[in-house]
Length: 450
Image (cartoon, rainbow, N blue to C red; front, side, top):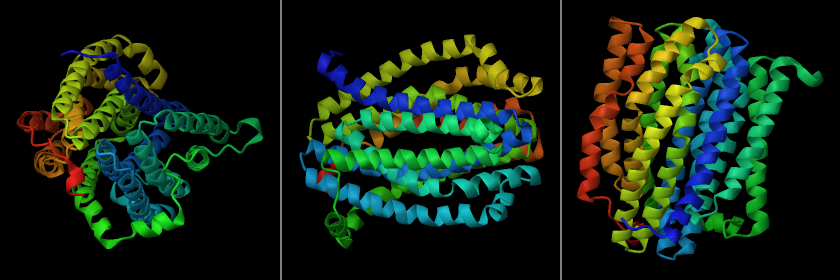
């Protein structure tokens, strides 16, 4: 496949900032693990559980942001910027309305509903404290991810990266101060980690919104534009496309959280080990998430411009690049496993569990990566969202989670076995997703129907 410099430049401009942003966020997660790990396994398990619940809601937010990004990329390909602005306004309004109930539940009732997902009262108390303090970050994050999705669809990836870097730096500094009581600050432990997160996310939102409204890049929407966006016909069009995406992200996110919650019934050590693996996995996935996002934008623009050959070319390039990078990254992670575990594992027992988990991850992660590229970067970019939803529902909820629950509650608490089972559904989805991509059912111009 012939590649010109302009093509490679477009990929690097879109993919690298997203990858770096994801890597920075993952690094923050690992710093949190290191800091909180000094407070003991219970604190580590509690923050890991709260982080998983935040992740679930972030998945829901990302579903809405993905819908916005796909539609805006295709509208840009069709050179219809007014429709991009309308999509952004609708996305922001729907996003705030969607996230407000969750913010209220996290802030006012966390001790009640968190007992449904973990049996340890000490873990519940600390995790509920973390959720209550960080509840306002849910609204901040929803607004941030939608604005960032719009900027990336437009090709402006540097500002989201810079704003994230500032936010993460503030978060690390404040966590260090508030968790341990440095620089005259109170030693708040888990509550200190939550407070640092809240302040940092508020700063992140201020950075993004200030830049957008000072630079006047077309996304500095006025109240009039927001009022115009509340058009029943236009909202219905938006929801007709975004509802399957939101449902897909929601059921996938709940299922992912179910794995984490069920792991809690295998013991605190297993939950703590899972808490260490989550940011480690996220750091590994960072570049590939950036690649999938870049693929979605480029494929969406090509489809919006009716350039089907270019869309196929982009898909093939990203898959071949992913395979090459997987070999390099998996080899590097396995070779570096000992110093990594010495840094993050809070006890020798958990270090042993994690050594085996990393081996399984390196052997099977290619299933998740290629699945991610095909779903996010190709099928959703072309609007083939119903297939993605149905496949995830059948495989995750019909097979993956039931098998995992049966093993935990009726057979074994062995963390290595349980971690292996987390890859079962990716194996089951691999061939159906590949078949769907090869058939080309994703080659759709959405600007003609939305």
